[in-house]
Length: 209
Image (cartoon, rainbow, N blue to C red):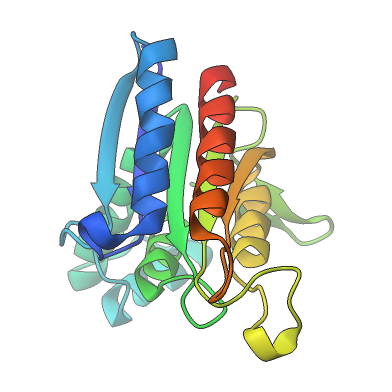
């Protein structure tokens, strides 16, 4: 059975535009993919492990060809379990609000937890990184929202290290089937028109996803 995992990075609940657009996407997705299993991973729900000293020690041990022990082994198991939850999905939906020109720190924590050697990447001393999720048929839809920044505005209204960073990470994993949905109404823009455009794109992508 095909599985879709919605990974949400907003803590704002019903006040979140990224979550609202994700719900629009999922409504159409359920209608057009009735046999797909859908799971929601709210990154704020406490299930995402930290990536602190023990986890870093484990990662460095793996790089050195050793086996993590003690607290490092426990942290390594937690990181691999988080990766397995992510990797079990064939289709992925990410809802990503802009925070300070970038992504919420909890999404960066997610990236740091799941981006492990032997899971998402390998390294060859001659050719560089190996992208271990390449050729796996994974598809991603990403919802990007902001309140002040918009691409048509100048740098006085911010810069985009949100979608640029996240899309680069996806490609680094080996996932290159990526569809983007953007909602950037600005402080003085037509909110309802921008919502309509974002919702229409979300429905169109979901129907063909």
